[in-house]
Amino acid sequence: MKVLFVTPELAPWMKSGGLGEISSSLPAALHEAGVDVRILVPAYASLLAAFPAANPVAELPGAGGELPDSRLLEATDENGVPLLLLDCPAFFRREGSAYLDADGNDFADNHLRFGLLSNAAALLSSESSPLGWRPDVLHCNDWPCGLAPAYLHFMGGAKAAIVMSIHNLAFQGIFPADTLTALGLPPEAFAMDGVEFWGKLSFMKAGLHYAERITTVSPRYAEEIQTEAFGYGFAGLLRWRCDDLCGILNGIDTRTWNPATDPYLPRHYEFAHLKGKEANKAALRQRFGLSAETSAPVLGAVCRITQQKGLDLLLGIGDEIAAMPAQLVVLGTGDRGLEAALSGLAARHPGQFAVHIGFDDGLAHLIEAGADIFLMPSRFEPCGLNQMYSLRYGTPPLVRETGGLADTVVDCNEATLADGTANGFVFNDASPEALFQTIRRAVSAWHDKALWHKLQRNGMVLDFSWSKAAAAYKSIYAELPVSRGKKKTAARTRSPAAS
Image (cartoon, rainbow, N blue to C red; front, side, top):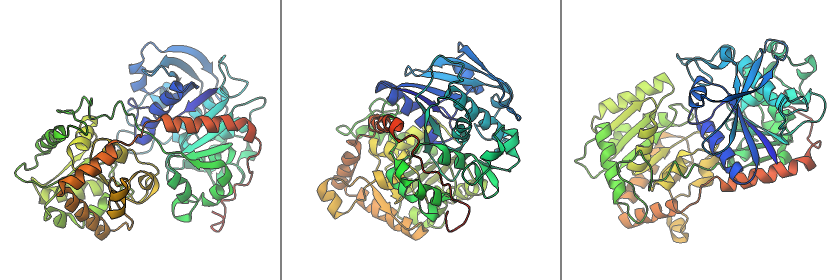
């Protein structure tokens, strides 16, 4: 089976969130499971620096409109997975992230940059491909790849079947209607049963409409996005296509995230030898300037600092957390106002709270290992990876009951302790009070060392490797030749009632 996995991110060279890690780990697991998978990704400067011997394999013509010529370079990653690097210097060799410039603003030509990526993916998945290798399945990831199914739909001849994966439906790639011409799509594509969404062009809508199958990153999130609260205007379309939609829980890279071998940790440990975790806690306190003259637990958080992640809920309960007592460390970047508010909270409690604005991979590992409790009070979370890292590192997570958090974290209570499934703490209401009561419950449990060790063990023995997810994707790929052509053709998302 041949699969072209197209993505705008690829860890560790270009990563804005979980998609970058998934785009590295899932193809590696598929490769290990016998799938002939290749990754198509923009040739960012960081990737070109990592693979200086990448070999040119094809020239790709512009696609009409304003999409320029480009070329493909081929390399192989450390997992043995072939990479196809889409080289267009004017589009991809820039300072900033995959989507944002150095000042944190969207690139003004993102529609062209990711239109080019989508068009290249479609071309390589059609009988017009310049490569000798042609995929059976085109696997697209999030809105930057969403136009690929539309481009492929309007290409003639034999073509690959399509899987469209939603990693975060809140990001949809919506642009003015007149970008249709710039992207080289035919006028008939701009229709309700096409790329049109409330009078604009949506990359995500295109992917959800034209793909044979739709996946998302956890079973709970697959249910949530069919509701008005989480569907972001696409709930009607997703309910219409519910037979073609499924949620597959992401895995984690268990080689990178392993407390027994993690190179970022000053002391390695495993469940049978948890003293190393205490040494990491001491190192974490020293790194953040927290007082070591206390027996208080350390609460840790590593995430984008946005309302989605729920860290704003801490602002109204900071003084109460400090009085428990408990310590708090936060690592992340995002909304400038929230960054300043969290930094102000830390300034009011020196030696007890600390915030590091930015991202540091080594520090993220140290927080996972050194914290006692890991906070993820997200308002929504399609899958989440940090709660799985935390479970593996013996750091029980405290989460809101949503998306993949609900699929992985089992609340600690009398029943779940008795049946051996308890591994963390869960609350439902996205309010400061609900978060505070759950933190207080977790801190109380932390003082019971026998109970806490049981929680740690329950989490550390779980298997979150990518093998299960890879097997599930293989099953979907295998079904595509049978289900292809049976896709429902109504993308009814125009009216509020339908969407």
